[in-house]
Length: 195
Image (cartoon, rainbow, N blue to C red):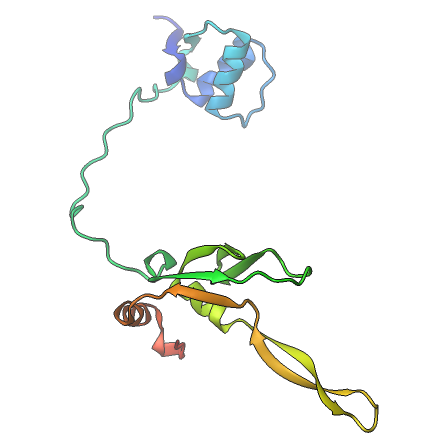
């Protein structure tokens, strides 16, 4: 009975590949190297290698040569149930207006629960409804000078007004039925979140 076994290179497991690379070929390999790295190092050192000979106790079971076919999924013809994930949201087509302000970013980032959508200003895009709601609700308060003069300071009186952070125009909105279905699926009345 032989102490060594021959294994096709593409079916060898990590332990056998490591042994062949480090002990047989004398290559310097780290103990955490993965199979692909080890095969690459072996082929770089010995390009014609198709099989490796290793001790039987190192060989272990051979890796499967082919991937087993995936079993047919039951109910594959049925439509998938809608979830509260943003991929199931109705879509809104809009354009975020450009800005002459050089301090403003060229792209607008809209984050909702960790999901970020990046919109390039001046381009028409299709975004999930929840990101549209966040964009709609994004306002900033700015101070505008009025024509009135403060008698104490002699400076114009500042009037504070809310304005959209990112002015935009909507090209296409989802239907009322789609919006109602979105709110029924995603709003959590138990904690008081509403549209």
